Image 1 (cartoon, rainbow, N blue to C red):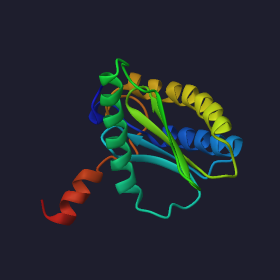
Image 2 (tube, helix red, strand yellow):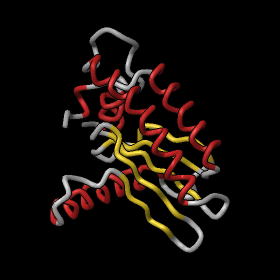
Image 3 (cartoon, rainbow, N blue to C red):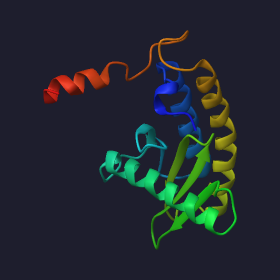
Image 4 (cartoon, rainbow, N blue to C red):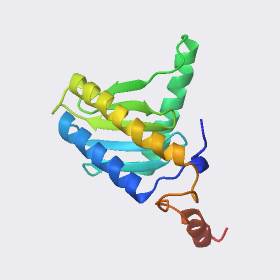
Length: 162
């Protein structure tokens, strides 16, 4: 797995990704879709306004996926490519994208697990292509558009005096 510093999410990539998330939501009738990297950073989201802190949710999502990877290994599987958490009214699907990013789809009774599973599988294939292109380009500073969050770390450090 390549670290977060080895690839960059450019503005054009972000627009392609959010268009695919919106298409997934339309086709599955799900409420919201988020992309989280394996370190717990929220990369993109689409759909309904979230009623919770997306930063905390992203961090917990990465931890959940990591814990389930360990559970998979314990039972002899290399990984779980997708996870479903089904509640009484709200449910979510988590799916691996290129071993670096997690797709999270939040849905309720307006749709079915089967439809979400089908549409997520299709979306994962499309998103893998986008992320593979980004990973091929490599780190920020190589050819291509300027990274969306370039300089954000420096600005945060300035704010907090570090």
